[in-house]
Length: 81
Image (cartoon, rainbow, N blue to C red; front, side, top):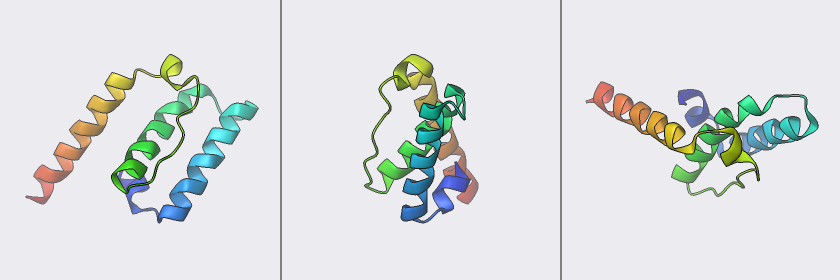
């Protein structure tokens, strides 16, 4: 997640679109939806709304993704304290 947090907004959005398009074309597997979830999370914290792919919830356990993101955020906060 640190990688995505360091990206400028425009590049984050372009990267999201590129990954999403490559999944739709079959170039990347749907396992990359995890990465899209992390990108969406970072974008949301910046106030940027990105579309969630239609079959996103079928391919990824959203609750597990949220737990992972929260645990990484807590880890970052405790390291900087």
